[in-house]
Length: 313
Image 1 (tube, one colour):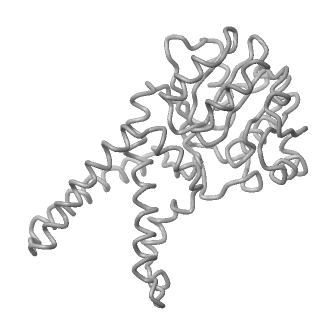
Image 2 (cartoon, rainbow, N blue to C red):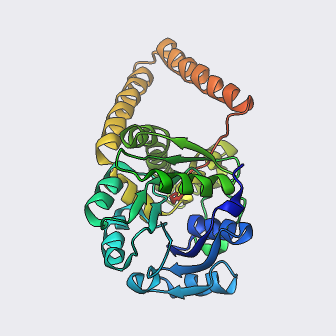
Image 3 (cartoon, rainbow, N blue to C red):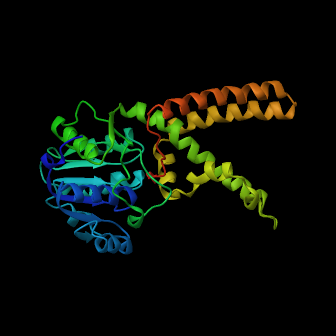
């Protein structure tokens, strides 16, 4: 664990004081990492709640005003809005300021930051794999990141000292910090997070429509349905943005999923129960091996971020 006393920012600005931004603010407050914290956002009610709960010291709906003199700016909003937010903030950021984000798509965000941010402002791309299906500052809690992975995706252009400080910040929050290539990150999360969210939303809609003629199918759904579709309670806005930002890899995974689904469909249609069982056994074997690794100490992370992540935060 990093000694958080060595890590200190006089002023921190958090753009998007929701589950992730709010929880990180609570960590910084408790560990004495931030002198003052300014909360920036669109919704005045959420901002007022953040101030009332003592998560932030001051609030503003104006990005330009909120980031002035900040030593650290945390962008914790739906990923597609990141570029617009950086454009508004850029002219008002002081030299030496560190900007970091928490989005679940990295390559495009890094490209935007490199184009938009002025020389002397240091960007470190991040993605804490933590979240619940709830959003807003009232869902925030300081233990959210404990034992969870936080992925940082530095490039050759990333300032080493800034990277170390952002790494220390997440270590202080109790996270395991993993460094990863941005492209590898986006491909991995298209498979492990983005595709499951899309499937969960689609499954819920399928079941809801099937039960729409006066018969409540959901009433009879077993725990498995509830467990699997829990992530469909994540922020639709956040997941819409993820699909827009990581389109290439998500399309690759959807095509792959469609092929597997076609195999299953054909098996059912032709009563080919042998192949069907083989497909199920293959999946069970792989899933059990993951569960076994998890049981031996690998952390498991829900990704309701948004981030909505997600999140899912």
